[in-house]
Image 1 (cartoon, rainbow over the protein chains, first blue to last red):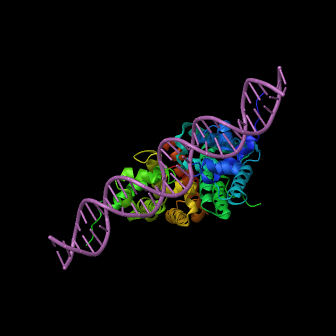
Image 2 (cartoon, chains in turn green, blue, purple, yellow):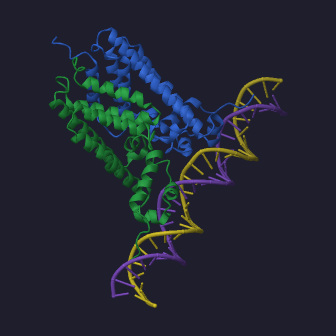
Image 3 (cartoon, rainbow over the protein chains, first blue to last red):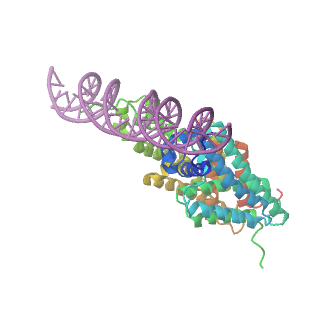
Length: 201
Length: 201
DNA sequence: ACCAACTTGAAACAGGGGTTCCAAGATAAC
DNA sequence: GTTATCTTGGAACCCCTGTTTCAAGTTGGT
């Protein structure tokens, strides 16, 4: 039987993910990955293939490990509008504070680069967008069923708008937008969708 | 008297701008600029300095020649909501069709890259954001004065939301979002801000 | 015609990009 | 212990990066 890997591929991929997320694929060299993981070039190439395949694996990992769990939680939350509020609250918190502050969203970032020229990358961006929109849609349908929306509101259209707002939050957070101003914007957007300020008491 | 330039610096800068806009600064080499402009390296460096300064000049040019005229037109338009509709209509048209289709917005793209690590770039991004928000704000104030907004609407908060939506449009257009779906989202967002669907004619 | 000032072309520079190759090392079954 | 099979380290590969250098060319005024 052959030798076995002397490292944990999953941990290495996570390390590469962080680099690609923060700096983008174009500004991240294989050398950076080698230095950050402590791995050797040979091991990297033997495990993941070239740079593009490594980036694709990282992007898929981001989608599955970071985005989709949030989408799922939102979609399955039965509270309606409060669920959406919480979703955006968590988003803004993650984008403006903590270990990944000012990193934006790896998928949003990929939109703006040359990455999306790759067909597989484009497919991942689309899957992310569908996941986000569908989760918002589900939560809005719930909200509508609970009578939380203004009369005649269209959950599908509103989901599209909120998805765009989320991309805006991701983008602006990278430029240093304050959590407070982002929160205020999201609150405003939700208020315009929700029922007119709950009648007194 | 010395020799005079054998080329038009402004035209060269515009050519460089297009490259940076489409591909991003990280994926655009000086070689690309040399090839696209037909200039020599020496002329480039003598005129603009290094790559970073060339990019800064291009980004400033984009802001002044492309973004700000749109902002000004929006801010000075006296029609209110229809002005905002037209603004977004033009934005979506420019992002999804024509010579620059799927290029997104050069400033939005800069948000997602390593560019914003440069302090001067960050300042330009902020100027862009203020310009966009202020223009939307002005148009919304006009709209409010004309009675086009729902009672109790906050033009400043609404401007922030619409600015985020604009970034979302820019981003998603790069991934191939259809003009129709973007238009639908914007229309929905504006409807939620505007007076409830005009009561039966 | 001359000259100072500037531009231009082409080559060269040092460094880094992604990738490949191969000898040396490590593993687990026989 | 031997062997087949895989992993690892490190050097090397070639090409492209941004930048600099300098001789040759070009200009407009004297």
